[in-house]
Length: 168
Image (cartoon, rainbow, N blue to C red; front, side, top):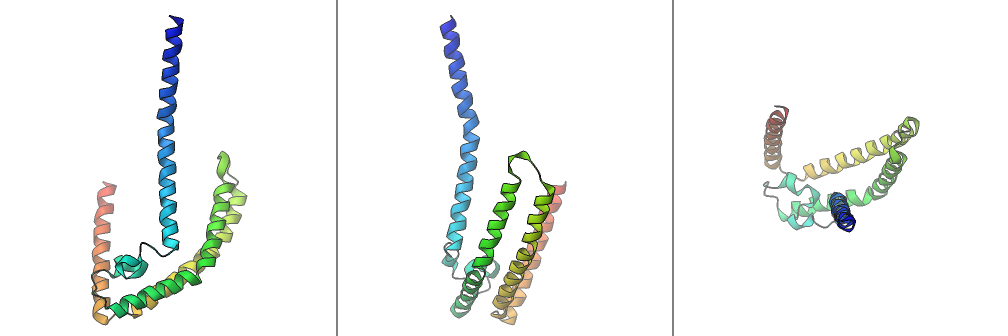
């Protein structure tokens, strides 16, 4: 009888270990997949299929000419290249911030210091992205700019409706 009890306990232990490990494995897989997308993005893959660069969704439906698509893609490529070192520096500092807060301890002074280092870099990157976006917009015709504004207004309306439903 005792032997049967030990076997049951062993089986329950194995089942529990498997049940507890599945979420961990799935979480690691999700992180690995996210990293793979990031790597693809860094290499410029995944965006170029539409011929409109990273901003393909923003410019989709505007009937861009091949020349406009090429110019927008070139602006995006130039921007990515010129901000590469800045983005790497930001990622290094973000990782340092994550590591500083691992282990269940929170050091407010260290966190504040790391966030203070991050802020000017984030602002600079935001400025560079804004500049690239403005360059891309300068490629559009007045009609295309009007269409883009209409798309943006529709998006904001849909987003407002979605958020309204979430608040209910």
